Image (cartoon, rainbow, N blue to C red):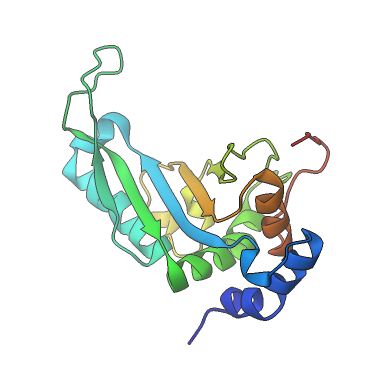
Length: 186
């Protein structure tokens, strides 16, 4: 069974974007390629108990087991050693990606305390959108009572959009809550 947002994209949003962006073909309209969720652990990455607890939390949030990332360099000021655990990362594609975006927009973001919208300055020059969430417990899959320490998540949405305007149009069609007070020029 296809996710709700995927069916919505192919039935309605794809054609609307082609008209809105004045593209020749609806297949040229921007679409999601993948979603990357990253959680940095810092010095807590060396503790296997903490690593397993956060790994289970991210696995519940995304529906996929995370990969343990390693430090590439030793830096004494940050108390890091080369090839020690740095954090956790998950890359979602296809149906799991659309299901995660649906839960993110409709459930997790509205649960954030004092949420004023996502920043319009979070686009890179390739049209990807990256933002952070300060508390990973905003997802309903995480049991708040079992969490020892609240961690933040970095979420990157990689699109096939050719520029920032195309990606912004795609995200607005999916009802991403943006902070419209701070307008920026693309």
